[in-house]
Image (cartoon, rainbow, N blue to C red; front, side, top):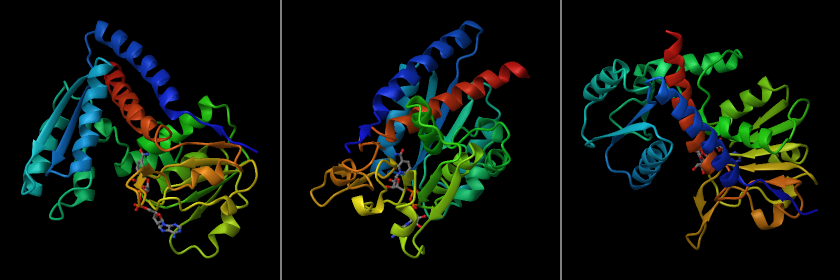
Length: 284
Ligand code: NAD
């Protein structure tokens, strides 16, 4: 079998067109969705991410502001900035780019963002609402994965999903979203014994490990759907995922490539969440 490639770039482009139309409608009502991105310090990868987020915002007609703070910024000053943005009516989404310098508590920062503007979906209130199936901002990468599957018309209910990785930003929430859609979910992680035993039974595998080419053909059942979240560099410095694409794509039914798979969906769902937050202000 040769897998069908799930083209995340194309699906993300379609979603962005839909978002831009909605942004336009909202602007006609006098509301321009606004996203504030805070970058503390000068991490090269983080800078690339925030630049992309800003550019995408502008491309879709939204307002975006980048707040750059020096590495030595105190936690108190960062929290004060967030408080100011919480009260700013032009800002509907606040994103603090992670990781933060070691002297700042990520959980304190995340908890200081108003849950109504938490477009990353990391605030405990939004996580709790997601877990209990209530309306909330969904974390962007997990949300993007569900949209990819929906756009590809891959049904989830009753499927056995094996999530490899249990981070708070990808593994844990994506498993919860699958559960919300009536899948049977198994989580695997660094302490899992006999990973292959679990993954080889999966109808859908989500690889969120952060190790280049970690999931091999032997891990995968014939015809399975394989979602690769990883963003790694191989020995040659080439961008690659957590899945050994060449061998797994010969066995899987569907597979996401890296790049042009899950990655473009993450930023798109951030835009979706910012639009949603702006629309929510119409209710008040
Ligand atoms: P993380 O380091 O926080 O978590 C990695 C997880 O992998 C851990 O839960 C750990 O238990 C598990 N793990 C480690 N070794 C393992 C092993 N031998 N067997 C099974 N499980 C093992 O990483 P993260 O933040 O969840 O990110 C995972 C990957 O996804 C990274 O490559 C990251 O760059 C990428 N990522 C991509 C996007 C995107 O938009 N495409 C977004 C977030 C993260």
